Length: 231
Image 1 (cartoon, rainbow, N blue to C red):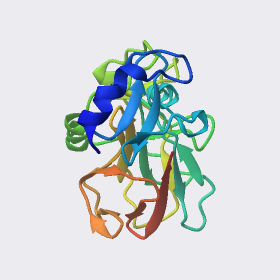
Image 2: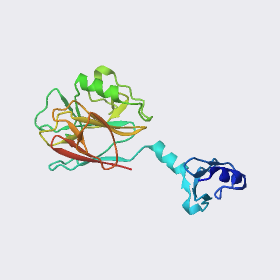
Image 3: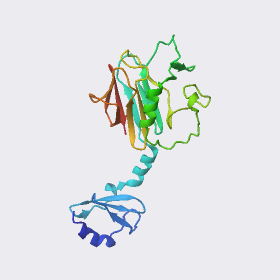
Image 4: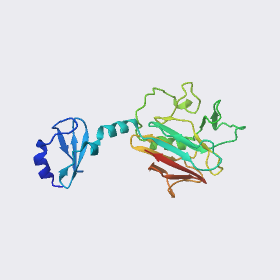
């Protein structure tokens, strides 16, 4: 791209969508209107100002602020809880489902049997909070005291670090630890942290301690297999 030639004629161009003259040429060979945020590709030193080919950076920015659509699915048999959404500013602990007729001090069971928070030991909790980056801003003002973190709150909200902790994703598989891993979404994307599990956490066949997830990544926890869909 001959940017010098294009910049010479930039003053003669107008955005076809809003007629603005405030156009900016990027190093990626895209002319961006600074008013309506439409982008027009430059192909072979010729700007493509056709509206049907325009890139709407305003829509992309809006989608970014709303966060990613992330769905975590379990493909292991005998699991009734097949899919869970990982929302911006939220986290989900993945662990082993216990016998519904038995509970111990490690788990808090609400009225609905699947609505469970598995207790995370102190070392794993410190690891998670250390790894967490700045979360997406949320509308919740829930404040949970450190000592009460593992009790069911009347506000129906729990925090892990600064992230809202949703109910656990429980799997019927003996090789999965009670609290095996945690998945969360922040402003940088969707991430996975292994909670010092007995059999390890693998993404696309490689053992990981922490990993930023991509669309269609395959996650193995013991003998259980999961997949993340991000859009």
